[in-house]
Length: 269
Image 1 (tube, one colour):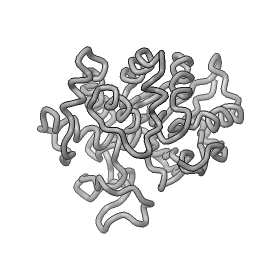
Image 2 (cartoon, rainbow, N blue to C red; image 1 turned 90 degrees about the vertical axis):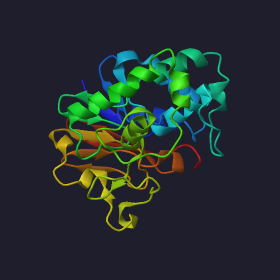
Image 3 (cartoon, rainbow, N blue to C red; image 1 turned 180 degrees about the vertical axis):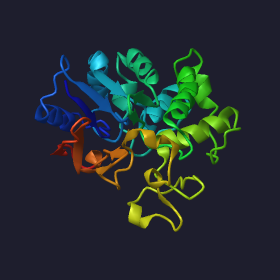
């Protein structure tokens, strides 16, 4: 059995199919980790959702910011964006079971000494704490009032503090799990930055370069940061290589760290 992790797919089903062929993925034998952002900006989000759901326990997927945006669209909590390509999902006859499947995916997955999130972690969060914080939000998303809950979350993302409560706490947790790229020495994120690390604001660095972070007992598998590209370190595996932007889709064998990439099939978003 091989456990593969794959970067942000974002509706690029043809690229995903090509990559799965390259790694000879067999759902009866192998397992696949998907770092989130299954949907949006690419042309075949509906096909990606249908495929991932059909794989059952062979696929483990965490939620990304674009997945949450889709849930927000369904809940009436998010407005359409110019580059959205979600209309086929929203109009699909099987929309309800697909959305129910998506909203019950985790925000953080921990297995042995590996942890998967879409974007990153606060330096003070251990793997145990990160999983517990994610579980707070997962319970709401999986519950009967998930649409109302999402509609309450609009607003500024505050810096993380242990004593935060209510919507501010949720926004702060999501700010790391699905959005963070760079942080300052106090663990405060720069929410507007999406460029390469060399262009980060003075005093900010990639979240995974924090000094002695509590999560460093684990290897963190993540995506989200296309401008970072493939990034492999002792305690992190960054897998978003910008497929939806016309670059590459990346898979990595979590045991051997062997990397397999395919050029994007889809036109640049």
